[in-house]
Length: 252
Figure 1 (cartoon, helix red, strand yellow):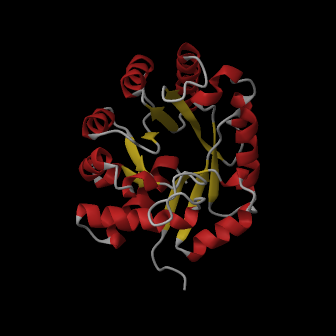
Figure 2 (cartoon, rainbow, N blue to C red):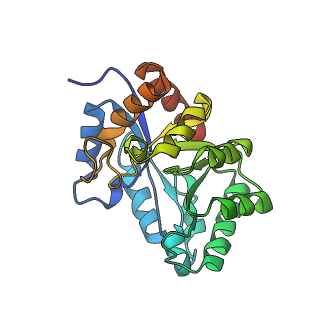
Figure 3 (cartoon, helix red, strand yellow):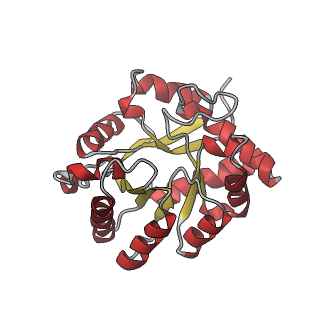
């Protein structure tokens, strides 16, 4: 039975799955997920995201270079920002947990993508892991696009407050359902509803009770239901505000 609620998965990677993207979208719609953004992580990956999104109703794309891949540069990214399915720059940022690219290179590539978002008046999708202080420093130095989201937010209350003070949105993934996510749950409780979005980050980070399995956009309602219980509000409210926020953020 199709859900009467309407959900938006604002960050997933359906263009790189073994399953056909159309089938993934159909399964999501059966769970009430009627819109999603498939996110690019390299120039070639972003091109695939855009090509995937243009063929599917209710699906849009981003184009960016992930900090893991910063060492490979940005050649070709600018042209992708003109693609009709591309709605934002990213995901981009800093990742000091894995350090797959040198930190100085990560910073340079992050700064360049902030510049592109500002120049094109596009939303910015940030990946920040174990690097909040430097991420805020870069944003303070470069300027922050009006629509900036910390995707798959993993920080605590102080990090959330710092992001919110700068005008950012916070997007929560299935991690918030993990029993170990005490500080993240505290952060999730203080995010104003008009700055809250939810995501699956498919195929990663499936929420409880599917933790450890391949994730899919159809799991968005599980994250929304958890947040409703955590915050003591209705599931309908969470669905409505996150649906509206994602549309407003991406301009779709």
